[in-house]
View 1 (cartoon, rainbow, N blue to C red):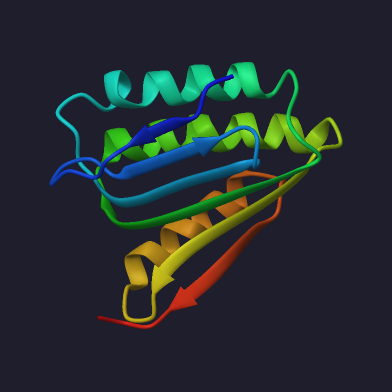
View 2 (view 1 turned 45 degrees about the vertical axis):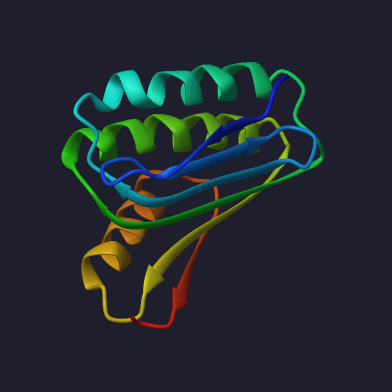
Length: 127
């Protein structure tokens, strides 16, 4: 499997998906013109990765804002993580939010309530 590295833009987050390190990072703003098109390669990557993940996978999500269509795509990714978790793989999911960003905190809580895999809510200092 190949590593996916996408640079952040004004409308899309930076993405790092490194299968050798078991590291997935999504950071920035997610308001792409077409969320499904943007996230499809990531979802496909997860489908492949789930066949042979490394023992411990770390997922870090730190978004400052995302639109409704991005939230659906994020849920699709998190559901794939949950499937891997249910199969016995160790999935360490961290949802980062700024200390003064109640919306991002609540979004993390929403994902926690929908999924059974553990998601840690991690507060970071405000800007």
